[in-house]
Length: 332
Ligand SMILES: Nc1nc2c(ncn2[C@@H]2O[C@H](COP(=O)(O)OP(=O)(O)OP(=O)(O)O)[C@@H](O)[C@H]2O)c(=O)[nH]1
Image 1 (cartoon, protein in one colour):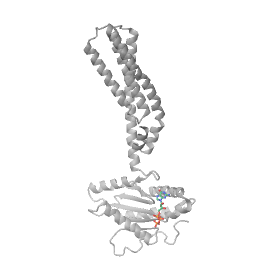
Image 2: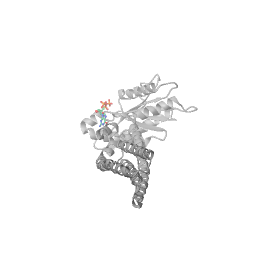
Image 3: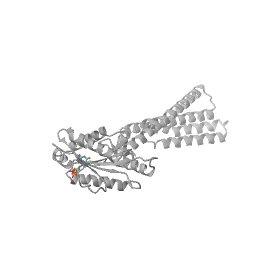
Image 4: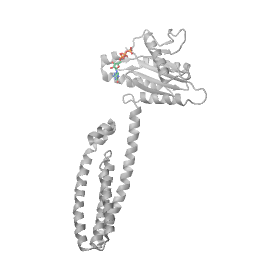
């Protein structure tokens, strides 16, 4: 069952669950020993019933049914595997509830009306209720945390801690489906690091990862609250800029490119990026918008890298727009 959990829950959460597996086994041992008392108790009850018969058969049936139901719930609790504490508290709560009900049944059957038994029965019952409340609370808290973790993991790139492609797609799609009232420009920027393979080949994958992290930091420093950054995969990033026309998008792209080309990342030195910009046109789909931004980025690569290009039907689009420093090496 632990294996199944590992497969169904994402890595971060499953580690938490596996770490607690020892507690599950310990708790299971306690429960099994508790449950062994059930048939023993039942035998005692029936023996007593032979002798004292003041309790009605209907009462006996009703109480037995409730006991069976609680046992069934206890068995179901065994399937709540994702939090050791909730599992422990709920299992103990239902076990105590069973003990309390069995004690009650025995008490009625034997008609001893023993004060000690009455006291023990009530104490057990109250403890069971307290444990039930805390168990459900723990369960709910852990469930909320689980949902939050899964939400984060499904939208965040684990390496750079920026958003991922899935989040970016849904963000832009929701803008396109429900555009804000009035005119509101939206621009998309595609940023692709230059000669990144060389960085990996020269310094290793680990240093390549650091370069990606620093790149994300540099882009984040330059962007404002209307912009969202995502790593789309490999060495490619996207920034969606709401309330941003082409002119402002180019200005932001230039500042990102400039800042990146000035940043020294040891031991690599400086890295550069080719950037493509596309500003949203009415009735355009996400695929079309991204295609235009992508082709602008590829044009930037073709024109010598380390520059910004705008996706457009401009007649002179082949002319470089804003070269940072075309003669400079990509990393020094
Ligand atoms: N370190 C690291 N490298 C990655 C990751 N994802 C992809 N890569 C590497 O990124 C490199 C991309 O290489 P290319 O597509 O040839 O791009 P490039 O070398 O930047 O060439 P240009 O884009 O033309 O400048 C490959 O070596 C991939 O292995 C990652 O998560 N970490």
